[in-house]
Length: 284
Image (cartoon, rainbow, N blue to C red):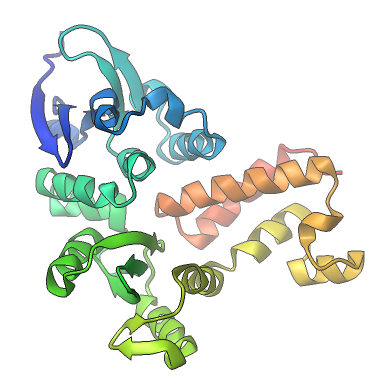
């Protein structure tokens, strides 16, 4: 019978029970999500009522080959509650409170080996993430191979609290994307990598140039780029020419793709997986 080992840890506002039974063998950690959600007046069951979170879990299961019970389970007794695998924690933590994922990230960084941490959350060490963060009064654009540690450094050095963030998948050409974004907003530069451009505007531009996700989904679902689709149907927005069934499929692929991006899956692998998924869907 497997022995269960628990730690009681303080993570910001929450006193959380952590199952570390597999830490030495597979470097996996399970957090008591019920404990974590309690100080915020929320419950894990409410997290799963949001469709994007369910489809994120589906994407994680597809990527890892695990069963749902390997990632989410409930226990009774002294340490009872709903437990989440550490790969779900960042999304759950952000749902609880913006910026809370940074605190969770620091905890995981201290408990997982560098190799395991980079593999799960940051991709290969030669790759880096492009980030956009909103602080009090300004937006910062940058790259890092260890974004969670970098965010803490920025808060400490600037004296500004991070309010919101965008984090790309690990990229081999992260520096080139960073410079392209900075050049695009050069008229709004304050100093260094800080700009006065609205956070949402920077994120939209960064997401567009990095991923070209709109064309990825459109090519998979309709066989043509979004611009060609709009010209053919005489519309300004792809959604305006979709049937109800096509729109449902489009939104499903977009949500799953977002989940796969957050899991660090590269462009070509996502394209292959989404193409296979699309074959199972009926598109009118």
